[in-house]
Length: 196
Image (cartoon, rainbow, N blue to C red; front, side, top):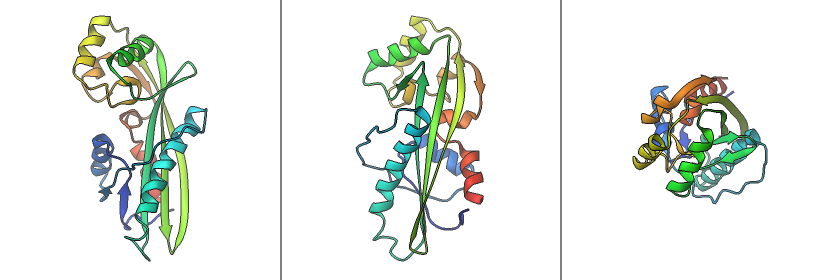
């Protein structure tokens, strides 16, 4: 589908996404999107794709003059947590983080990451959208454990108020699907799409 040798720009400030791209051998630059996200979709899979596209498109447009006449690729990603018909984004404060995690405790929820790849090839704009879903089941978590985890500050910048790759891992009972998707980037899916 795509030439892996053209410049790749990651439209995200997430250190976890950058780390996964690096581990997979990608060479890229980081230019976080500054767009004010607008929720236009209601289904979690389409919402994740749409938010990823908003980010990717924002960065793609901002780089047009810089890459004038040259091919380049922008990758946007957005991860959301979904439980019982509710979309859980990043918590606004510690109380909201506690409420989210309390709700997810001892239950199975879904994590969706939307991917948007925008490619400029020979002056033509090509858009590829996809999403990945992973089911995550948590053990029962006591209020004390939740407060202890939230006090680390780890939950504040993450959808669903937790990071699976940190100390919260001790509460994860089962995962069905791509682990890296829960971290924030389904790197295998992205690689397969790019190598075409």
